[in-house]
Image (cartoon, rainbow, N blue to C red):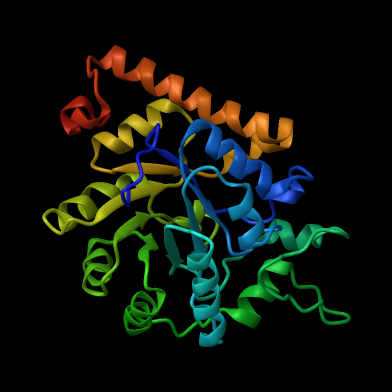
Length: 293
């Protein structure tokens, strides 16, 4: 992937606020990715800086980001990532506004003292009106008028490989290809943006078909919980998957070792699944290994 040889077809998906799970936060996560030989995609809403994570990494790094209202900030974050060796930018395009996150509202979720976003500034909540950190961040920073023209601008500005994340329709995949991206991440934002949105595994086959012959890499995330899920995604045409929540659960249990154990468990489950379906090599997977019930 992008010239890097990964030890398994799983990368760590971008997710915010790792220090909510463990004091070492993203530094523990990136060390776990390095010990298993795979890629970590750092969220722009990380609780460690782009540079701190790069210093702790022993494997390839990608940076997930958005197109901000401040185009200078957008370009600066990309330049910072490139300067310290990140291999790609993952542009999330499915968040012009934040979906309704009612639990955050009920719980009045705030980052605890001592935990903060390290790569972006976030204004405090307005007196007398509750808005979660995520709502404030999206309202203050994200440009809701995003079009494919801005994606083209971002690809030219980045001067490194760009994946577009949040694609669920083959026509959007075609438009992303025309914008010059390196690959497509089929994603519904972990099911947290639009209730009732199509599952990524259901969206994947049509997008793979639409991208056939383009040379673009197709990645999928969302709902990957077991090695059998990874094998299904690869059989449907994904080159690799990204895993989010399970890695965070491992991080919460035992820091770096916990995240490492989750990835190692998935590796072993993939090996077992391939053996039991009679496919010695993951590269040989195809839809003939699947049936729809």
